[in-house]
Image (cartoon, rainbow, N blue to C red; front, side):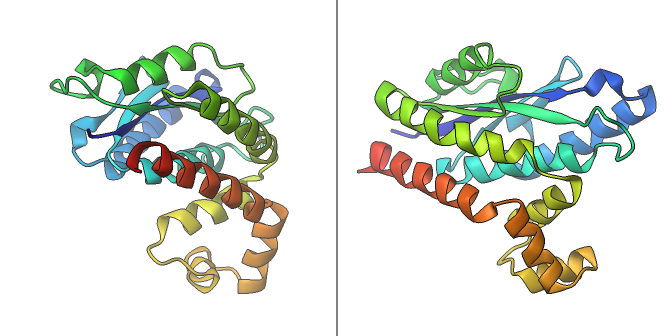
Length: 215
């Protein structure tokens, strides 16, 4: 039994961008999404401000979603009060049918992802749904606190965490070099973003998902 993660998301405040900025954001986001999946057609943007993608390794799905949260925050206009954001609904389960692309596919993971995306509050950022209702409820409690932390991330903090999750075998020194900052400044940014707490919550969910599906 192969288990996948399917993510359905949207872009908050997308329509407040100029036509030119919207076009560039869609193009750049599509490129990023395709770098996150096994096959290019496993990711797609639709209706302009919505997207969906398949993750083959469920142990990576939360990290990829955090990267996307950071990505949209990073691409916000620093002078605008309406920053870009995203909501992400993760469905964990089987895929019954893989069509020509992700939007033509179907199965349990798609149902969990899409149906629960429609139930998300406007201020909710990330949600995980599995076939085990009790575990899903536990994840939602953890993610409720992660949502509260993530909402407060600055553009600079989001950029730091994005690099942390993007650079292979990342270290604070590597991130500092990429962002042309000092290592102490990177450490301070991660502390201010309460990354250690967020990482613990993600690690717990990842371990529990592996127990649920692979033991």
